[in-house]
Length: 204
Image (tube, rainbow, N blue to C red; front, side, top):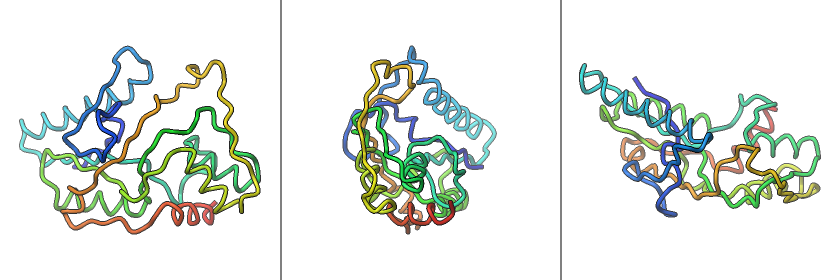
């Protein structure tokens, strides 16, 4: 089996360079938002333990944010919100400075990665699933969407509320996943960020 984990297992990374599967950051156990990250870490441990005890070939896919055709129009994630703003010709409003950096993956590439992992991956091993060339900040992504899909006709506005903590956002961080271990299985990403958006826009 392949367990679908998340880049959130890395918490707040200890490095701003590309993050390998052996790199782990800090998670505050008293932060309510940490429940997701802690849950993913715990299930990974259960997978490793069960696989070791019963010799079950369990592999783990640590997915970056993944999107493309098939994403629901009303999806609440930031990339979908930017898309809706561009298509509806509404300004993109950022409630942070948009400095958080992540890497992303096209849905078809993610699916093929899962097949590579389940067929060729090492039991008990985790694999980062991402396109390393898509590392971009939230603000840079907003600007890309504006220029690519709205022809620069909307605005990217930063409006930080006084009660920002109540929004439940992750702390500002840089998470560039290193997919070298997956690439060594023979996998490769085929679709970049701009094309990911164009294809998702067409499906919308």
